[in-house]
Image (tube, rainbow, N blue to C red; front, side):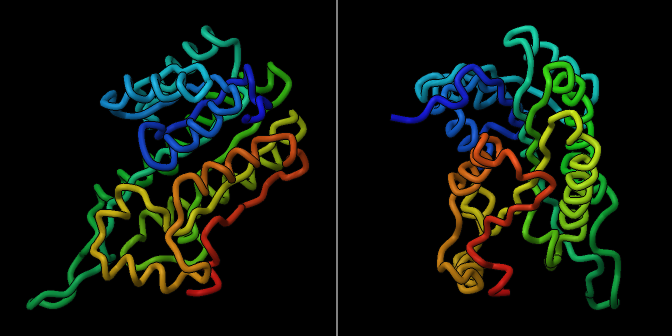
Length: 260
């Protein structure tokens, strides 16, 4: 039987409809949590709420664009109205718009990554984390504390070909995590980040087999990670077992940093 250590606690998860976000929501639900799942689309709403309830939690699915501060505030008000507060925030929402900085064709080098691709990724992956966290923190302070967990990435530590925007956004998340740890510890709010390696989300599984094989070859543990691997890391960091873990970046990557 699953422990019920999060029974009655309120967990807000952005990008909750699929992949790591959904796996994380289910992990907390099995421990009795109340899950507010945010996503930019409502396509998964009915299935999400049914699955959370079946796993043992309570569910509220909300369509939220994390780059819109008014939408964030409105969604949070509904969460607080329903459950009284927020105990855990997991900033999981993220997008990619990959391109090389410059590219070459018959005419020679030319611009590669478009400005709109840069803006889109920075808006969701960095500004979105800022906006949601800024909105949540006052609620946590009023309730006497909480836990904030951010999605970084292994590429923020090493860079990655064709991902100037994504790497910049995730490096920024690491910087914000460490800054907020300094600012918010006195309010009994712990702030940490998880840096996933290559994880079997829909986006990754759509890649050509030779690229996936190359990823595995650079992962010393010899496999691609599963969304549940990241969900378990979030769960532990949010638990009392990690009560003295603060301002850290937990790499969950199968050793890919070593193997690169």
